[in-house]
Image (cartoon, rainbow, N blue to C red):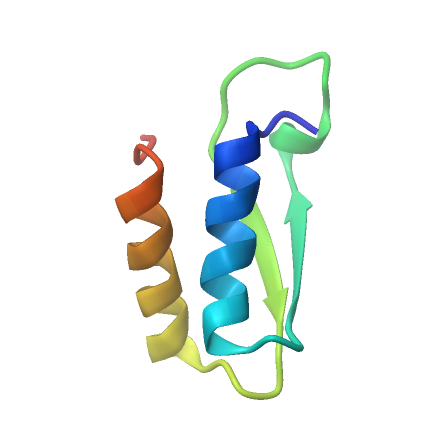
Length: 69
């Protein structure tokens, strides 16, 4: 997995803030250690988090880590 500690903490912290029982999964190119670059693809599974809350989670993550193209 190609995520820095700060990125992992930003993602898990933001998801936990809105639903401590939610699960977040990394998928896509960031799961392959042999590749470079790429966006961060995350699947969030929750009974409480809706689309608007996902936007708030994304906003919180981008406050802590640099947004990528």
